[in-house]
Image 1 (cartoon, rainbow, N blue to C red):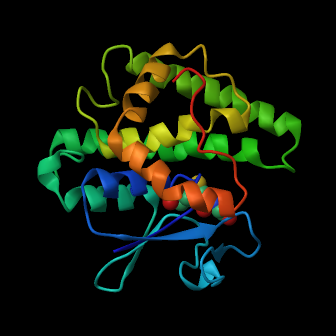
Image 2: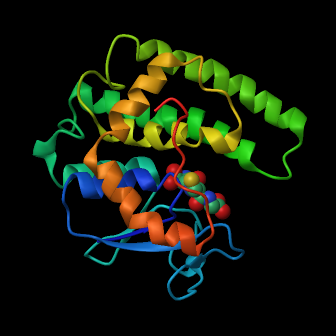
Length: 219
Ligand SMILES: N[C@@H](CCC(=O)N[C@@H](CS)C(=O)NCC(=O)O)C(=O)O
C-alpha cells in the first residue's frame, strides 16, 4: 500500500492509523502548496496520480487507487478489524463511526479549509467562523459524556477530528472555550502512533519549509 499524504493535511489521520495498526505501507509526500501539486521526492505532478488533486490517496496492492479520507480510514481499519478502530460492518456502532466521519468531513473540515485561504474575503471567513463555532459547540457537548466521539473507544473518526482541531494555531480560531475538545485532543496526542507520525514527517516539514505539526495550545 502506498499512502499519498502531505505533512500537515487531513491525510495525517490515515498516516496515523496505518502506524497505529502496524500495517506495512509506503508513504509518498505531496507538496499541496506547490502549483501544480507535486511529489516531494521526484517532482512528479500529483494530478497524474490522483486526478482529484487532493490528499489522501491510497494505492492498493492491487494497483487501484482509493480516495476520500473518510473511506480510506475505514478501508485501513478494516484490514485489522480486531483492533476495533472501526466496528463490525453493518452494526449500529459502525454507522455511528460513519456518521461522525461524515460530520467531521462535511461540517468541520470544509468549514475550516476556507479560513486558510489567503484570498477569502474576511466577511466570508466570518460566516465560516460562526458556522464552525456552532458545530464545535455541538462536538464539545457530545464529548462531555465520553472520551471519544462514539464512546470510550478510539476509532478512525477520532483520528480525523484530532487532525482538524490541531490546525487551530493556523486558522486563528480560539478553541479555548471548548474544554472537552481540549481533553480529547490531549488523549489522542499521547498515543504513540501520533509521536511516530511526527517523526516520519519531521524531515519533510523541514524540506518543505513548513512549520511544526500544529497542536492545540492546551495540550
Ligand atoms: N474530498 C477529499 C478532500 C481532501 C482535502 O480537502 N484535502 C486537502 C488537504 S486537507 C488537499 O489535498 N488540498 C489540496 C487542494 O485541494 O488543492 C477527501 O475527503 O479526502
